[in-house]
Length: 102
Image (cartoon, rainbow, N blue to C red; front, side, top):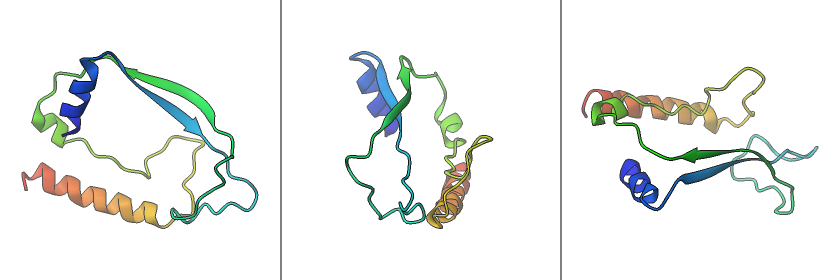
């Protein structure tokens, strides 16, 4: 599904994605995904990702991919939001089903 959508986009040129950062203020909740921060909070663009082509991988290769919201690099910590751990477990179960052809 996503591959088809990306292929469609690329027919019109590169697909460009912006990586934006919004810093929490002193009392902003970081443990509740339903809590909204003020709309006027500044955003900082950290970078841009420009996709110009899709790798010629097979469907089997794509089924081996898994997203884990708790996977991070040094210097980046998880928030106290408990949903992150639940999502990580759910995505792992989804991956297990996909990798077995379920």
